[in-house]
Amino acid sequence: MNAQLQPTGSAYFIAGETERPETHTLSVLVDNEPGVLARVIGLFSGRGYNIESLTVSETEHEKHLSRITIVTTGTPHVLEQIKHQLERIVPVHRVVDLSVRALELGQDKPLARELALVKVAGTGDARVEALRLADAFRAKVIDANTEHFIFEITGAVAKIEQFIAIMKPLGLMEVCRTGVAAMNRGPQGM
Image (cartoon, rainbow, N blue to C red; front, side, top):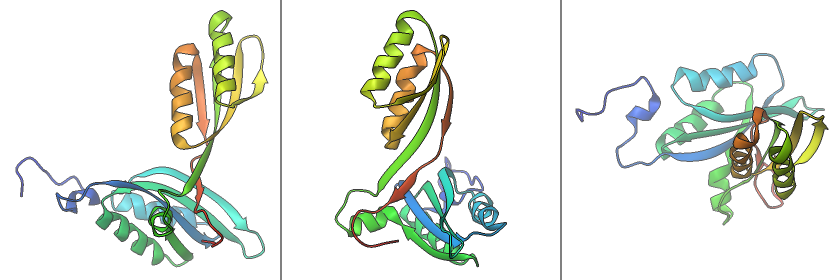
């Protein structure tokens, strides 16, 4: 074992030194019932996997099915392990690695969007600049008074990150993000 590397309890440690971590978006179709989300999250935390983004919503009301979208990072080996372990959880109907599927379809990555509410407090020039930049980013003002704005912005994760970074010096007070919603292009479903 390399003297510099020490086991951390994380599954990332077992990956070969030549494999580079990749960020992937997984879509998981599950029964909409109590405890399912806890089991999925337990799989990640119990094995030392990190979740960068997580969204859940019922998507097929008649069948009582929910879609969980998870963004995680790992080596190809670890990502394949995560997918196989998710498939073994009882109420899981289907697991699709949207990142892999996009490449199979000849696309760079899946379509992914996020919504954020961003509160900015300020007066004078900072207030005017915040409004000007929000307009450039196509963020909507959904609440305002003489002391603050709350902007709603939707877009790719990088756009949200950039908007938040730009608002910091202008009086950024609070951010609430939904997490990533994603799907692949084309006529096929999940």
